[in-house]
Amino acid sequence: MFKHSIITITLALLVALAAGCGSAVTTTPMPPAATSAPPTNTPIPPTAEPSLTGPPTTETGASSNTWLQRDLSTDEAVVWYLGHCGYAIRTQNHFLIFDYQEKHDGRDAKPRPAQPSLENGFIVPDEIENLRVRVFVTHEHADHFDPVIFEWKDQVPDIAYYFGWRAADDPSFHYLVGPRAELRSGDLEIYTINSHHSGVPEVAYLVKVDGLVIYHNGDYRGEYEEDYPFLRRLAGRIDLTFAFRDFDERNRYFEQNIDLFQRFDHRAIFPMHDSAEKGLYAEFERVYLSKLPGLPIFCPQKIGERFLFRDGHIIREGESATNMPEPIQVTEGTTQTRFIDGTVMVCVPAGDLLPADCCP
Ligand SMILES: [Zn+2]
Ligand SMILES: [Zn+2]
Image (tube, rainbow, N blue to C red):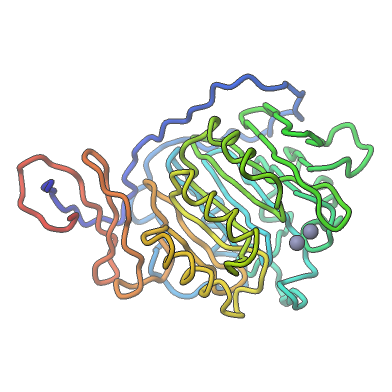
């Protein structure tokens, strides 16, 4: 049993993650860099950091702006749930958007608020115009692709688009038709695996960016027995996994997810392809945890919900000690985040200094 000291903080604990970005990929010219300087890695004083247990989010966008502007280190990301399969991820130097659309949320219509913003699940160009925006679309079905995304480029100078099919004729877009397309695009490494469903080609994305590895499944349901080992050779660890929400053990999607969850070292898994408020994500969590105890699943409960990824763990805004998931992987030399009385506790391995029991 390892002993640890306890440091109660609301500061970031900065631990660099190994990037593992060495594979040869096709090079494609990128749009010019943003005129504004990329974010720096300067530590932020405690008073400047948004509270993790602060008041509920508002519809003004002010809260999302805070998270859009503060500096992030290479082991940090902010994740927003945008409804259905839509997720936005801010990393140290990029803002990634996957399968964004404004019409569907599960089987329901996506509700449009009076003041759309990231905080209620909508991309507003005013909020992201100074970021390096990278837009990913898995396939052309209307619950994954919305032409509204093309309107952003009129206002966002540093934006790039990636499609899993030949979505348009614009040569500035990136079409990862594959099979198994690979692309180095600026600071991003992008890999796809392919399948077809309902008559259209589609991909799942594996993206390496700013020290993080991200997987977005879209509706991919292909030859995963061959595709996942292919991806596993590219990345053993996936920091942010966005998985199809099927939890019916009779379905191939279930078998596929089990393979995905077992084959990689996952840091945070988010279900998608339903309405967060229907409760099916909780059932997804229950079923997969019954098969694979300790799996780090995080279920959004509403559109616009925000998660902070830091030091290999998700810190969920507003969570209390009573309903925080237990960290699952504790090995010698790693750090571990705990939540006690609503306070972020970080347990730092400290040899024999203290007989602390915070990290069993
Ligand atoms: Zn589809
Ligand atoms: Zn779909």
